[in-house]
Length: 337
Image (tube, rainbow, N blue to C red; front, side, top):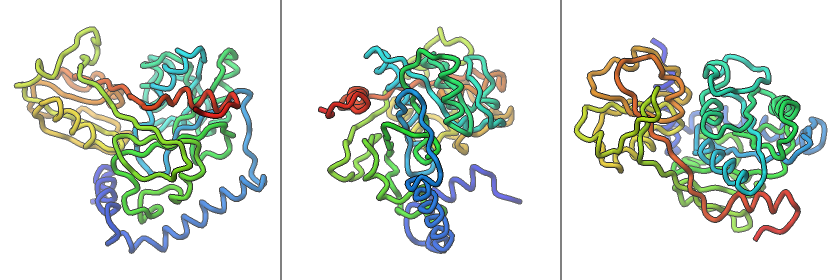
């Protein structure tokens, strides 16, 4: 029987923590490294063309596979930039989507058409959100529909060199760089040296060493109030949920981070980890429980799949020092403070 995507991701995460069995994949990793370097060189030489949008573009991405906290960081930046008088639009690849063309995301969109992260971004911030495999095409479509947008936030586009960027931000979480090897022997999409080229690194609850010349920001996620899926006006504290038979489900880049967050709130539950962008089915909720706990990203795909109450935990990013100010100083041409 073939391994499920969840099992495969779990297996890779285990071997990427060290340089033992993963060494068997180094010949393939070398090929991937050479191809990645060749592609980047072709863009640098202008043989492959990067295309500019008429407004500044801020790319938020990472050099490792899997989620690292980019979505809550983008939400934080969208809100902070709005408070500074800048209206941002958001473009994303639309991971988990069945379609590749550029299209707008609406609050009632289907996650299978636009992707779970993009749908979450739209519902949380209300700003224009467009998705498409070609981020330049998505950004162009966004600006055609919303010409008053002054800045584009590009979700997970660090390796999408077709889109010219004015500011690059790399996010690292507590998993760090693991064994430091390139795919598939390790988790890296690009070599560690790539971090020396970005404008800023955001460390999400981690203390990974970054070169001194790269601006570094600290980030943590906060959230302790649950919303009822389907009726967000109903809320619950962790104390109100304690004592119930709880099952927690998470299909994000690092499900353990969500489970640890719940335990820090004093909750006891059975944990169910799924692959990133997992498409939930009725069978995933066939459990003996009083309630289900899940993330906002998972929740956009769970409606109607169970009669059990699903409590969703929204989280907000806290970033220090002021990353939005750093970005505005960069794009306005002044030296960051």
